[in-house]
Structure formats: C-alpha cells, structure tokens
Image (cartoon, rainbow, N blue to C red; front, side):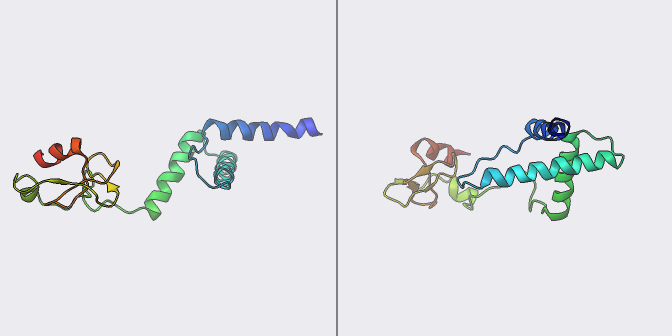
Length: 138
C-alpha cells in the first residue's frame, strides 16, 4: 500500500521541482511558505486537468499570475521607465554650481543604485564620482 500511494508524492515533488518559486529570504519560514504556494499551485493544476483543461503546468501558472495581476495589480502611472530623480533637466544640465560633496548620509546613487556618501551640492541627489558626469550630461 505504501509503494502504491508513493507515486503521488513523487509526482508532486517532480512537478514542484520543475517550476519552483526561486526567492530566497532571510527568515527561516520563507522556504516553507513558498513550498506551500508551490504545492497549492500544483494541486490546483491537477484539479484543473481533471476538470478538462489541457494546459501544461507552466501555462497554468502564468494564467494564474496574469489573473491575479489583472485583479489586484495597478497600471503604471506613466509609460516607460520610472524615474526616481525629481531634478528638472534645465537645473541638472546647466553646468553651474554642481560639486561633489562628501560626508552625507548613506543613500543610493541615482545612476547605479549602489550606496554612497557623496552627493551633488546643487541637485541634492546621491551620486558616485563615476556617475556624477553621466548624470549631469544626459
């Protein structure tokens, strides 16, 4: 009886390993939560196949995510890349009074997103030495 019912557990493990959620967390319970989500998705896929759907596992997962995004997702406010920098272009590229200052609180560089203690005095944005010129040219 054990060997007869073991087939289902092996299939579930195989199905989950094919499309495992690959997010790592710092808390000990994060892998358990993602495993539970994977098991729920696998069980829902099996139930949908028994109900007559002929979708493979990956397509089913994509459709579930698409439906969740349509229901709970929000559209972007503007098309294209989001800009975090609120420095107007005329101020940014005028080449007057821009100077690198150090000793600031650690913030993320607006160009490369790495942390730095340097900033532009006039624009008041965090910038590395190597990113300073590129930010003020474009």
